[in-house]
Image 1 (cartoon, helix red, strand yellow):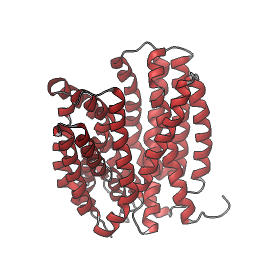
Image 2 (cartoon, rainbow, N blue to C red):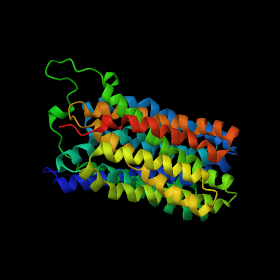
Image 3 (cartoon, rainbow, N blue to C red):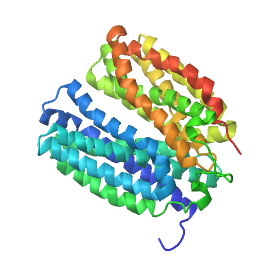
Length: 389
């Protein structure tokens, strides 16, 4: 880039970063059955293998803020893309060529390292674009991640059906995605130097981990992330077990949830600008709770699908709005987004085993009531996300 990008160019570049992140993630997910079969893993063993990705995320995410302040958001997105694509290639090689679980786990760990810093950096850049636009757009960035993940799955399904080797598939998707990520970040905004400062004029800015507002936003994001993540992990199984349905019906239920959440993220920006963050998020927490209750207690599949739509609407805005709120003050924004992301991503680590353990005692569908209950602390903490001048 020889000249500064325009604001629309930067907005589109952030859209591209979110879409590419979704595509690469879904490409791996679409081939997990093949990886399980090639490595001769049980479901439990596959779950343990996937913990390598979560571990990588938890290792690097708390460091992402400092890395962005030092190397800039575009630089960290590029580093994250290299790590994600490199991890995909290593995991694909380990699973299908070497036939070694440890090599596959190493690849997933490297991928996890990249996923987290890529995520934080593109959210920081998205918040900067949103601030300069003067209107809400962050939920749309997150909606595009969902669109990207659907696109990655759409490519992965025929790849798997045709028996395309996993390593070849991941290279065919990953390497162009890497090039595209490098091109897109060239259009990121040139952020003013002061926006990356980690200290104020007195040189003594405290850690975001000690800021009550940042921690309250993190709790809110954690609750909404669990409302989203629990559907990813357990909604299909809940419908299959609780309503005695075929596998395809459970997959359809999850697809309805994703579509509902994605549409809400595209359309919810106008509502946020009109009514403000706190009132809209209060409404979202209520919708999510009501939707889950209907899904669990409907007694009829058609009514349960209505509940799933309401659940998706309610779960849609908490995470992206939390990212915007964490970055309201451009000074130290990267560190705050890193802290909120670290707390929020805890839902994706603790959620599956917690709900799985509860499901063993109450049934898969009824275990989701825990998520409905968590909408209470979500509603109590949304005040922290109120707009700040």
